[in-house]
Length: 166
Image 1: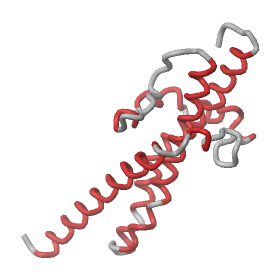
Image 2 (image 1 turned 135 degrees about the horizontal axis):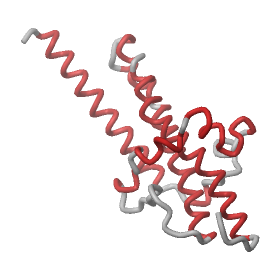
Image 3 (image 1 turned 30 degrees about the horizontal axis):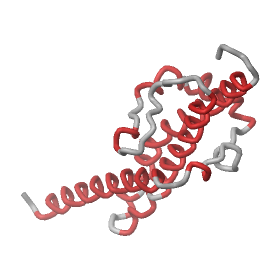
């Protein structure tokens, strides 16, 4: 095997390993951030008008059809909160779920933000490919959080106002 091929295989291995470290490191870091730091009304997490309370994601991106196929990162951490299925409808649980959608969103934004690091050891042609990977691997997760959060907030309002159904 020529040395150029070996170097290419090695750099692919390095890139894969570093992406793994970035994904796990981001999850580990965000797992230690106190829940009160994840306010769904702050700039990063608040629902924008164009999102139409999450309906943009349902109508334009079909999120309801594929969101259940996304992996749940809660399994990676002992402190993880599973967002795959709701296990309660109490306002306390729903508010915790909302907090965890913010935590997950931040985790995925941090992974995307790390993509420029790949310019440090890759050629620009290879490094530029890292951004589409970062977006493809993380934007579906961000979309799912941004779709679910307004729905969860409505469910909390209904529960706190004495409504029974969601």
